[in-house]
Length: 156
Image (cartoon, rainbow, N blue to C red; front, side, top):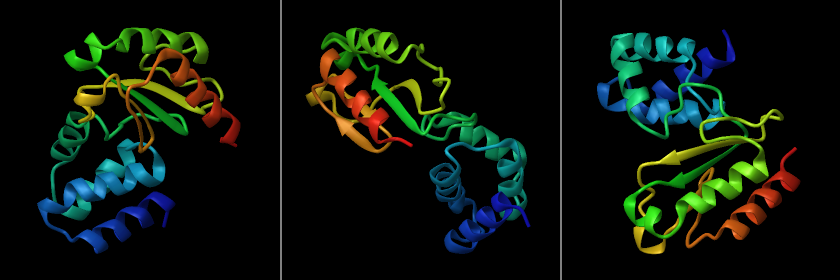
């Protein structure tokens, strides 16, 4: 049995075989594998007795369920109007320049992926950056670069 097959079976056993288990199973795969491969989505469909189209439709709808390989550290910048008004474009420009990648790309060393997100739930503290599961509110271009540099130092 492959690693992904074992992971899917373990997650289905943990969360159950109902349709309601789809999201926690997909989230568990992303947590372990950092993205949902076609193989993993087909296995989930089989295990939960759902169509592959339903599993892919769910996976592709949600921003945090990545369906393509990502870097070790996923950097997301909120793109809501409130973060836009507080300078999110300057944050993105600084990160693109510093990381030498554009939004949607992954660095050559696979340490970082730079993305935008529709809302991170911190509108009152914008602009907001999320690195993996850590929120950085009221971020400035300089602070964003410092955060990325810290992650680069601590990433093996």
